Image (cartoon, rainbow, N blue to C red):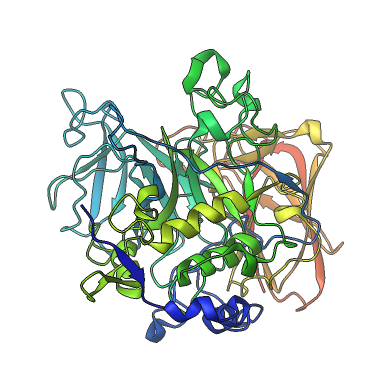
Length: 557
């Protein structure tokens, strides 16, 4: 049985929380104006966190003044156990922690990730499936990095040697140092300068790095300045859906394979016929701007800090817990173990005093009864879980969140993240206008490795794509292949330049990936520029087709 505890910072009850939060968070609007490296801390000497993806990424975009909040009546989950305990208890994790294996070691040796069909069946994930290994992908992993076989989701993200490409996999397992790893699936590459949507959460295909609480944040004085990712009990929290496409919403790409109502009680909303209609996989939840978080009765420093993040950035639902619980994604750290993980950092930062007067670490992952009277003195317990339970019930759905109104649109509640030295704009944003739209076909990983998993192509003469941007340099990320043809490119109405995208490889060939096919520099700083790409309908001398593919644009400030 756990000992009774009292919170170390007893004086918080007598101090106005808005004053305390100001001390914890500093001036909430003062994001640094310096150029940001997405995978290296802004200030390593102060152990500041990494800050990946573009300022307008759904992970980095603050809640806006135009957010339309819908009450969802999110209840604290109840898990009495099987069989139920006597006396009654509640073993639901609030919060649970969803460990993210974020491996940012681009110079480490390449490691094979081979296919394993064990997935979540409860079997041993260590060996590959079949008589011979089926290679999914090769990624840089330190030789001593080990992830034992388990039933966890094990979403993983790996930084490639170019220092900008992220490859993701789930569930990642590597049982022996220096040997190959296994996974059931690997996900197409994501550019660390892009929007960061695509990733290895199987329930949504959203990022395993974008919404994770990283090392160096959610620490005294260092808040989480981005949206977090969470997992919920989808049979209770999410709305019932009849078709898979109706089970998710932007920024999610999909939903669980068992989401639809024909899968019974385990389906989305299968145990709650009254779930709010907009509650789908990928939903953005937030504490309304009108809510006074000082009045929520929060007792712990991390609880107050998380409230600030949930009000200013929110939380995206990226996966299901598979049962009662409320999970938060967090970085397991460079070792893949408790040592050096966010779990350890949290316990070192936030303390409680036990009944013997000893200062001990407060766990990140706790159960509902860790905060009530079940474990020890009825009036005491961990304040962190009590706070998270209150925050759950303060959350609303941001119902108008979408690609053209990220965070609900309007004026952001916080300044945007500092600018990147480079920003990637993916092909599916509204700023890229395709004309006529019917002439362009969406393509995916069946043709090549594409940034964020998709691109658009056309071989219709006269079809065009127009992109307006602000920056001093532009790169068009396209594809060179044996059915790719000629395009004309003009900037700011200038003379069109012919661009040859012909190549030797056929679409779908192993190793074929998008690349820079056109670049321009020396553009006026601080001014709006427009690039127009026009399909000529002709092949090049290097190909037999006329297809032109637009994957993304890179813009230098």
